[in-house]
Image 1: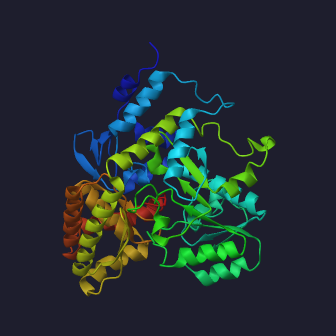
Image 2: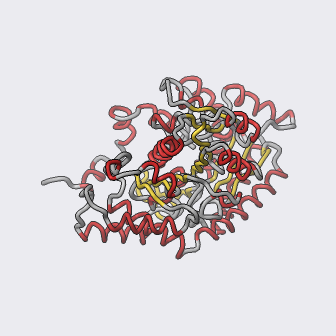
Length: 466
């Protein structure tokens, strides 16, 4: 009979956790179960997920930012169908395919002062390319990166990952030096040695949702150029409109030498990433015909990915999603700051556009402290996971913590999110915080259950990425 996808999905529905436990990563199924996220997801559209019962969930995680234009967008679907129907001669390898050229052109049109694009299949591949290009262009080996940075999990990108839990067990890594996020003096001290190829930085860090301090990027860029080093801005999560500008570094008025993008560019369908750079950098890497393939990717310019990228950029423009991210982001931030004034457990609201962090901290009242304390002592971050669980179970809102060992809830809704959907989230968040501040037993019981499961099975949210 041949392969029948519909039959596979129908006949083996619900087997995902068992298959993962046996054939893939068994810890994934354990983590999902321990945090109460076990669902059989049936379909998705826009800002919503639907489980096997037909229940609808508001998606404020968007696949860690992959679904920037929402799920199942018809424009991208139509473009992908058109590629398949055209039966293109794809990935010939010794060719110059049109769609890749068109996507490169479209990206450079949106990135003033950058000239070239390298196409790949993911954010971590884009970072790998940026690291190699920076070392080649400068003739230097050492790369500076920041505390809590997340740039990917392959060997090169892991070398500039500021989170210890991801690096453990995989050394030795490439030469690099970690500096405090936003610390200009630390940057100046490292540059004096004269062996630094580049600083790689997220203008808004995904882990913890930390925004680069005002003025730092501009001064850092000047320092780097003075010392012959490059500035790499990692916009894999924060780029393509998420922060209310096409790139988040635009807030700081700087011009990077290299920029990495991915996630939203995929349209949520086909993995795609890109490294954008100046002509000066690319001409050092691809300096002769002999070096045409000195850095390349077999799948990097495949037609489906290029079509998805082109369609996604069209949607961002046609639907005004950058302006929407700024407007709805202000609504969410304003509403959350008002909530911070009401709830003593909320200590900070930060971010840009639709990349927002809600930080929780030690309560003042003895009544809340006696409940908050045991969770934090058991493992920092369990309180936030309790909030995530309550939002998910009681209000059908999907969110997640902003990183391991931190009490920060990250909001990452699609750029298509509406004002009404933002209001629905704010109402749900207020209801959860009311319940917690009133010491409602069901919510705190879930938190205490997390404490037990964390002790028995290991960290409940360790797999959360930047």
